[in-house]
Length: 514
Image (tube, rainbow, N blue to C red; front, side, top):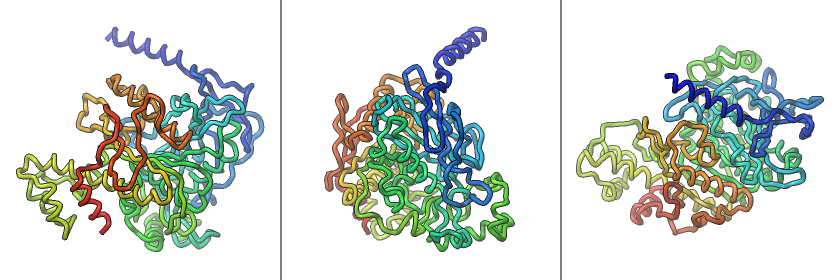
């Protein structure tokens, strides 16, 4: 015990020694709302935290597009994160430990962004704007593994921003639509993201960034947001490239919004308001923000973006930006039509296959045909992986017509975790590798993990700088080409792999297109 205490004390001293230097108010950066001063770490990266990019969306501003942030005099201390947006806070939810989850204060006053930069005055570095996941019901720019300091050492500026989630971010309601000059409601979280991107356009040059060279990247709900911003008419011109992690091409929209139309979402919103005892917008806006997150974090009918005719239209623009799109191996468990866990028997597998694939079930069962109950789990997993990778391949085939250049990937490095080896490369596992924040987590990392983190942060930052992820010392990453059906494996060994065996590719391509 004494030995443990000595180690703990030494660790605390080391953490203090490595802490960022105090705020330097002699060299503030001026934004269009006022000057800010951050803190610089020993590696020369300055973090500017908790910068307001919009007025607090409270009172009569609840469920409205973000208004401009108020101006301030003097120099604002930007050494601490602003509050995260209102949400439930479980603290951790395995496999997502505390490092992946929102910690600290939450508030309806939450429109704050964070900037990490090592740029010198006058530089024009590429900018990477990260959008967090969390099912559109939770998440924050202050999550530990999203720290942008290490990625900023690659010669890019990293920015992230809070956006409204749950009912406060995505409630659709007839009266909200009626009061909107755009006859729209429901996409307030996306509007927050767009407001942050507009802030970047106006201000990032003062931090050494190039507003003409912005890459948006996001994971899960953040990846879906990236795909939505790519097609949003009001987000056009705010970014040059995009990276979609575990989002578009993998999960159907119905997973988040219930597959409902805008009118159906409006009706659900009215019912939701009544369930809260509100019969007018004034009463709805008077309800304490925390009450919207009691019992259920989301509004009935889903809490995600909706095609509203303003922020999101039914049609894509003719041209969209180049994109990287991919998944982690653990994502496959969410697809495949197998639904809730069931006993791994041949009978259950066959029945589910017939229900899912209908007229094509016989063809499917020729390709995935367990002969015993012992084989079911492995074959089911292989089927889901093939389906997920082919799904992204099919999405990329269509997206290529608009983006001109698409790169796909498959991440399969399981985070070393002796206590829970069953989680492997779970949904979100790639994030500490991309941000080079492995040290934020207490895991038995190896040289394989350090090497992979260096590779992935380089691929991502190279793409942000030039539109090409390739670079010196990296395994070649081939751009997507129709008919090739290959993807980039990122893991212990990185390189091109087939998305599936040819017959299985042919089956799932046919299935997705019918």
